[in-house]
Each structure stands twice: as C-alpha cells, then as structure tokens.
Amino acid sequence: MTDAAAAPTRPKRVLVRRHGLVTRVTHWVNALSIFFLLLSGLQIFNAHPALYWGQQSDFAHPWLAMGAYEQAGRLHGVTRVGETLFDTTGFLGASKEGGVTVARGFPSWLTIPSFRFLALGRRYHFFFAWLFAINGAVYVATALLGGHLKRDLAPTRDQLEPRHVLGEIWDHMRLKFPRGEAAKRYNVLQKGAYLGVAFVLLPVMVLTGMTMSPSLDADFPWLLDLFGGRQSARSIHFIAASLIVLFFLVHIAMVVASGAWNNVRSMVTGRYAITLPRPDVQPGDAP
Image 1 (cartoon, rainbow, N blue to C red):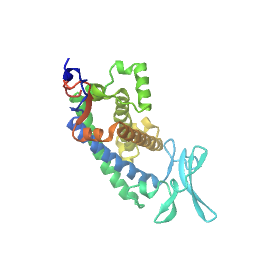
Image 2 (cartoon, helix red, strand yellow):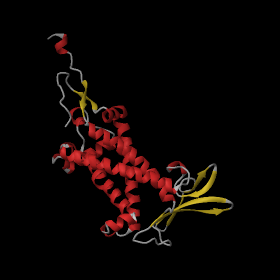
Image 3 (cartoon, rainbow, N blue to C red):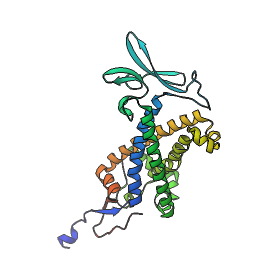
C-alpha cells in the first residue's frame, strides 16, 4: 500500500448556498425596522409608563408601572409588577439625563430620540411600522410562492419526534451545533423560533399596533373585540415586543457561539461554510 493510499483523507471545507436573495434582503430590512420600532416605541411608552388590561386605563391598578419617588433629596426609580415593587434606580423609573437623575420610564440611551420628544418618536415609529409591514408581506409572499416556507422552515416529521427535539435542546445547551451536511439546513429549534416570530409575534405586533389607533378602530372595530380593548392591546404589544427582544438576544448569542463570521457571511452573501468528511464529496445547494 502506498503512502498516499494509506494517508487518511482530510476533511474539506466548502461553501454552500444557504440563504436566497429575498431572505437576506428582508432579514436586514426587518432587523433595521425592528431596531427603530423598539427604541421609538420606548419613547412612546415613556409618555405614560404604565400598562393596563381592558378598554380604559385604570390608573390605580396598573399591572406594570414605572415611576420615581424622592427620599432624602435623592430620586429613586421603582418598577411595579402586579403588587410587587422592585428598586430599579438608574435604569427604570429614574435614570441619568444630562448628568442629572430624572424621573423617566426607560433611560435616554434606550429611546429614539434620546431626548423627550413624543411626536418625533411617533413619526419614527409609524414610518418604520409601514416599512416593517411591507417588508414582512414581501417575505411571506415569496416564502409561500417560492417554496421557502415548505422547503426550509416547515419541520419534517422526524424533526418533530420528542426524542429529536430533546436531543437538539441538549446539544444547544452544550453549545454543540450541527456539522457537515446537517449544517446546510435549519434545525428544529431554529425552524420553531423563526416560524413563531414570523407568523405569531410579528403579526400580533402589527395587529395590536393597529388596535391602539382610534382611526383604525373605526374602520376595523373587530380589533377591539379580538384583543379585549385598547389597553389590553397596548399590554400585549409590549409583551410581544419583549419576547422579540428575548429572541434577538438568544439569536445573537447562538450566532456568536456557532461561528459569528460564518453566519454573518451567509446572511450577506448567501454562502455558508461547512466541513465535509471526504474531499471527493461535492455538496449540492442547501435546501
């Protein structure tokens, strides 16, 4: 046996197609829109940093509220959730603004604009809300018509088996990610998260946002019945936004842990690097 024949075959690193052009463009437009929507939304929330259930505001019984009180010449921030109070001085309820501690729901560095300007915050919010809605409609239409939804996002029967799902959760907890051919497609946790955000959380955000508009309520009165009133819609809007922030944080953590450059490149160029066990294997396009 020759040395060349006896030598072990080395893995081969290749680039495969993972994301189509529409997916990549709508992903970045979506990320930009959500960024401005969240931060301008906090500016709007600061105008009245309290949430209620039902149609009308029950000022004495918010389920969540941020405020401040003065004690010994010092301003303290407090956040109330139900009947429980939390001292959140320096972040929620009271934070620095121009070097001075002021009463403010969310701090200035978390709002757009950073200074108190409700009208400008609403302009940002409504502009990016339209951009977000149009971009989402384009994504959903192309996903349905182009087969992206069925081909890439719909979980297969074997992926939905409890043993497989639990195995994926355990692997992610250990930061063990798919390699080789398995890395060419989304795993069941990715599919579940993307479907949940794209087809549950984001539509809820749009519909509850519409419900908070009196003019739209006049055109679509069923929205108030659907969400149980304007104040309930505002609360659900806030909760959905918080879940999107949680998704974003987990998403970024997984991107970094599984290979930041490889993941970012795939969402910019569409090409994702995988390692094949044999150099003679030529990968096809990603599903």
